[in-house]
Amino acid sequence: MRTLYLVFSHHHQEQLLRLVTTIRQLSPNGIIVIHHDPSGERLNTLPYADKENIHIIPHPVCGQWGDFSLVEQYLHSFRWCLENLDFDWLVTITGLSYPIMQLQKFESYLEHSENDAYAYHFNAFDPNHWPEGTGKKRYLFAYFKLPKNPYYYKLPSNIKAALGSYRIRFNQIQPFFRIISMPRGGATRLGVRRWRLPFNKRFTIYGGRQMININRKALDEIFSFLNENKKYISYSKRTLIPDESFFLNILCNSPNLNVCNDILRHIKWPDNINHASSVDVILSDEVEKAIQSGNPFALKFDVKIDPKSLDIVDKFLGI
Image (cartoon, rainbow, N blue to C red; front, side, top):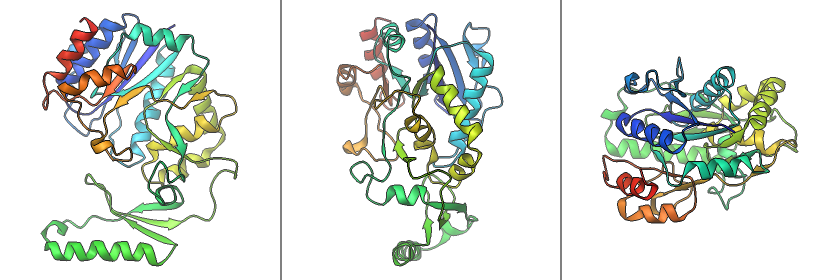
């Protein structure tokens, strides 16, 4: 059995190289593929040149948080892997993830698994997972990007606060439109309530994590679904944060797949908030807790914030 580790990165190139080197040591027969977001610093490919079973995705896709472009990064990478490589399982990780167990043990677990996919998921309209109304806001409106005001930053803070209050009030007094301010430099969206969805009532809309672990059967199922449901992509392009739903909807609604509700990652969330928009950094005194989770990978690590954390992991792994 061969496992493919698909790494999505956009900065921290020294840490990316360390991650790839460690995976290669722990998985001599594994395949490592890197999709490096071109919207950030250009990837230095020299350390990976002529390395066996280490590949760089050509023509990478620029990504923007909360945008369909993150789904396109996955689709582009999946297609390239299917067309060019021979593998049994595909594991997606970020450039700031790191293995915290012997990967041969992890790969043996996948090889003998009765599941086709491991992905954390839940009903997107369940308020026990996301704040009430999140699923409706994300997936029942068709969103359009509004032009950016290049002079917005010059406005006085009291005017900005008033505009924010008006936006909230506007969303509360009527059910047909939503104005959503996106973080991380994303364009503000105008949402229009959908009256029809491109699937039947038995199709559950799921939320969860964008990272997934899937075998070839599940990967083939994804593209089979997309080929048979052309409107699903156009629908997803108009949702908010589609990468936290797009693949989960396909995998978890399929009658042909066994999907385990486990992401197989130890994730540190800020202040234990599971619906935070980004994960927190694992510090040196938290590495042992991550290792004890029994998961094969943990995130996120940042050697610029805590340079000793990965040294502790390496010592545990014996590398």
